[in-house]
Amino acid sequence: MAANKFWKKKELSSLEQQVGSALTQIETTITEVKNLKVSSVVDYTAKINAKKQVYLVLIPYPCLSIYNKISSKLLPELEKRVKATILVAAKRTIESKWVKSHRSQTRPNSRTLTSVYEGLLEDLISPSVILGRRTRVRVDGTKFYRIFLDESDQKELEHRLDAIKDVYKVLTTRDLEFEFRRDDTFYQKRGAKKVAKK
Image (cartoon, rainbow, N blue to C red; front, side, top):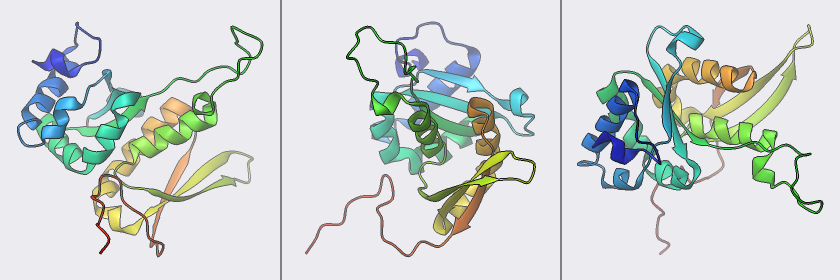
């Protein structure tokens, strides 16, 4: 049953079987999970020296829209069953500017390094939304990125921020700092149902 949740993969590791069986159990309560597939599951606990288990679940890019709709319900349920911090991100590819099969071929913007890194960060902090980002330079010349998140999501995100910061650093070599602030402008939260106009 766990193998059904994986995209084009037959041989599963024990960790992937654990996550796959947890997802099949969640299907009974959250029906949208039936359409969600997983590419692979990676254990980042040793790489980032975390006290609690940290797993990165990679999903195929076409499944990202499904995940965004149910992320606020799915993540707490999955963490409860697996007993670890779960981070979910879409599997994206970075293409070189210079590798071309034809002279007139142009690289899509979604395959650039900047776009992939920004998309990865948005996936990791889901279901929250990035309100702003700043690039800061320290006195010694090293860069770090200050990310502003919505104050209303602080309770949900606070216990996961260290894991997000460390995993993002391993994947991209970029340092992050998070800040929470109140956002007065209206925006729709990911996965929220649209309110019908009267």
